[in-house]
Each structure stands twice: as C-alpha cells, then as structure tokens.
Length: 136
Image (cartoon, rainbow, N blue to C red; front, top):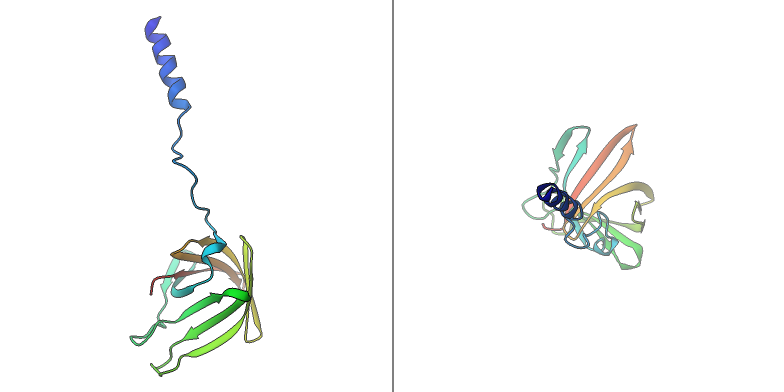
C-alpha cells in the first residue's frame, strides 16, 4: 500500500510540473518592426529560394521608420546611391500593409522578433512566405 501511495504522489507531483520557465516572447512583437530588414529568402510551397539580389557593395533591405514611413532600398550594379522607394505602412500583430510608390501589399505576420521577420502574402492563389533578418 505504501508503494502504491508513493507512486500516486509521484504521478501527482509530476503532473503539476510544466516546462514553462516564464513568459516567452510572442511570435509577433511589433516593438521590433522599426529597423532595417535584409532580404534572406522566400518560400513557395515546400521550396525555399534564396534572395539573389544582394551585391558585394550593399545588401537590399526594407526599413520601417517612426511615423509609419517605410523605405525599400535596392543596390543595383553597385552604383553609389541605391534606388530608394518610399511609402507608408500600417501594422497590427496579425497584418502588415505597405504602400510603396502607390502599390499596396498586405501581408500576414508570422514571426517578428528582434532578429527575424517572416510574413506571408497570396500571389496568384499561391501562398508566399518572405523571410528577412535584421543582421546584414
């Protein structure tokens, strides 16, 4: 009987334990949006395609600024001044909408930390996941 009671207590104690070591950061934290995000890759279905537009002289990026301003910066042929398109954005923990040069795109935010940004869009019926990093 003592063994049965001891076993029951052990099971009860283990069932009360969790692996929660405190609050974890949410998958989408808008406090991290306002910075430069460098293009890494995109996913279409099960295929990941690396971003090939980066050059030795500079890496392309999108930058979210205070006041809901956004810049899309493209280094082309290593010219001294990159091509910069400007616009605006709005963001919630679920959606990001950009309007750059009069073109509006809406994305579903999947991940936003201080280092990683992942967002999805639907293009011609296909879901595309865009992947960025804050580290050049």
